[in-house]
Image 1 (cartoon, rainbow, N blue to C red):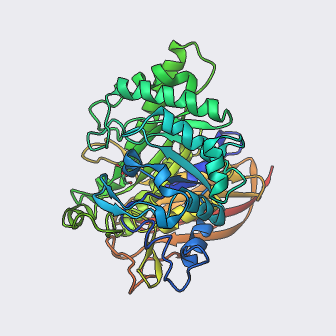
Image 2: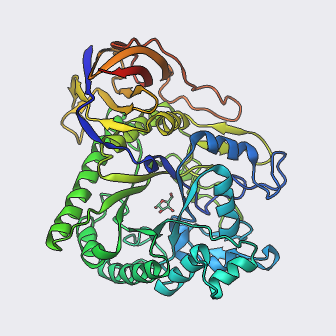
Image 3: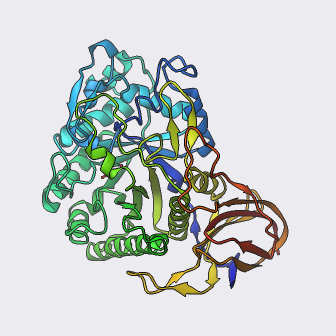
Amino acid sequence: MKAKIKADKAKIISKIDERIYSSFLEHLGRAVYGGIYEPEHETADDMGFRQDVLNTVKELNPPLIRYPGGNFVSGYNWEDTVGDKAKRPRRMELAWFSVETNQVGLDEFQEWARRAGSQVMMAVNLGTRGPAEAGNVVEYCNSRTDTYYANMRRENGFEEPFGIHTWCLGNEMDGPWQIGHKTAYEYARTACEAAKIMKWTDPTIELVACGSSNSGMPTFGEWEETVLRECYEHVDYISLHNYYGNRENNTPDYLGCSLEMGRFIETVAAICDKIKGEKKGDKDIYLSFDEWNVWFHSNEADEKIEKWQVAPPLLEDIYNLEDALVVGCLLNTLINHSDRVKIACLAQLVNVIAPIMTVNGGDLWLQTTFYPYLYAARFGRGTALDAEVECDTYAGSKEAAIPYVDCSVVYSKERGEVVLFVVNRHLTEAIEVALELKGFWAEQVLEHKVLNHTDLKAVNSPKAPRNVTPYDGEAAVDSVTLEPHSYHMIRIKVKSE
Ligand code: AHR
């Protein structure tokens, strides 16, 4: 089969906001305890953080890490998590029915993020708590005033404010599973008042309002309209969440799920513009896709996990090759919508539906999905080009025409390279792709990495951590052959024409 990818230096989608390569760490399962924090581990640093994990996170270099949830945030008392560790309460944690020891809290996490070279994207509790507490935590984190919460931070050993810039106004408040679930109007009013107090406390922050928990929610659309009608003046982003999975074991369908992600983004962007029009506003509301990933493998196992444990192994999906191909396509979709999506968080980062896995007391290992995320996060920084892909399509059960070739193209003027991220969705045929780069002199292929395996269900594991691992490909500046069901990252050295 033959295909063509045409990219033109003059046809630009947008400068990419690097924060689309952000991630997420929730107090859930072994993400924090046994993930980033394990004081007895041989690599633990002075604060008990695993340095093997920290160094791997640094490789991914996520600009933001959303924290502390997720569903967890809707029962979160941030005051429990700061100051003297010996005095912190153990709590029944009602989002995941676990015990929260609070041995890692806001103070420690912001220090961990600093050590990782990332910024914290902090969520406030609008489930069991409200606008006042949201303002207080902003004061604790960001204020230099001689006032109660800023002084509490100083007493806890942090003279300098943490300077957290991006804040989420709650989490998935449209979902009946959420602690303190609200109707759209109830949430909209609470979020609006919280936003005012938070911005009065620190006018430099930016705020993300909760959108729908996924595009299949019965209130999707209406929820976004109601929230933005109340909050437009006070917020900067609206969130999108979605998880994908091959529940029916229909791989062709599954590989096409990124088309749905694209429509979801376009629909929410259209709603933002509609409300901007209604308000006669001059501000665009941007999108924060702050939870996205594959999540379905662990669903059954999770039902059998005993309640009220500390750090139980929850949501430990083990990802195979086809999941990595899907993650590659989802990343392409985010890059190809980078005119509207300014923040996106791979959910999550360590152990919980994560690219990085740890064995308690043992080694770290990398999932298949680590690699497309690594390559996009490392080389997908620059300008997204509006590439044209000429290829055959196939029909799925929900999609009329799924292109066999999925791709995004990023030009980095700084590095003098064009980077292509390409997935061949064809399960049995190789595709010979002609590459046409207009407006550039393509000099040489700097790097071509391929992720593939004879078995689509192949996974990595502690015993076989490199079973599915990238290898070098043989792309030329004007052509590449994509083996069936394969992921590719191709860096081409270019000069501008
Ligand atoms: O990431 C796991 C969970 O998925 C989050 O806690 C929640 O926001 C979403 O439903």
